[in-house]
Length: 369
Image (cartoon, rainbow, N blue to C red; front, side):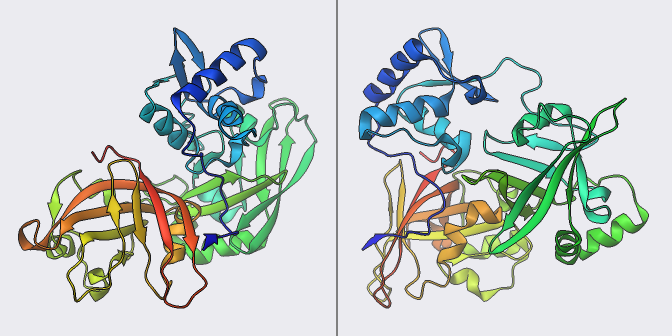
């Protein structure tokens, strides 16, 4: 078996140790790093000094594996890098800057990490094939120095589809930056969210639950992966480490779909994928090798591989992965599972042999210990 060549994101190599990270910090103290690589929201605090977490990990990999990592391609972005460093004994702090969240009432942009940004969609997104870009968001699209009258073409990629768009600077007296896409993407947005499209026929203000448009930087210059997220996340209705039976989950989320009995389940109308993991299977069940060691979750997908893409593409599709776990079937009353919280897809290994399941590794986003 070998790693699937289609895996879109680089992974932080698990063999990077605390010693490698300290060597990287010493190297940064000596050689520095470009201003453009400054972290946006978090710092690694070491011996009273602050360092950008992703840059530290990128340098640490040169000591562990002999190559510098491209920080723009870390799976999970800034949050995953922070978690990796915390697990190795380092302190991560929030920057002392009131603008770090980049939330704007008029445009509702938010920077999630150095590689990911979201925009809560408004009437302009649905009806005027574009959106304004606030001044403090320009650096994400690398247009800080754009002049009035300039225009730069970019590509917005969604799965196998690519949409041509452009960035432009308007209005000499009060410079304003806009992102404009063509009618093909506008049609996709309207057909994906017909209720919201109709809502903005007669309303101008953004509603609190309008969809979110996510942009993720890619290695290709001026190309961004996009996805659309409904704001409904199942995790907001669940309590970490609480035991839930499938019947209780069905009642809580009004689920009638019988496929909730499967190990991998996508609840309708939620941007969530649920994993039901039983470590020790009964003899009448397929003997998948699944376990959580407190640091990472190892599990095997379904033998027909029909749900593999739900896990592999979870970040790109805007779906959270929720894990329900038990040691054995009767560990809890009513055959329940303990809710371990949100997990991040890390890697998978495929087998071309028929009926051989894909092997996955996930890391917890919430504290699941």
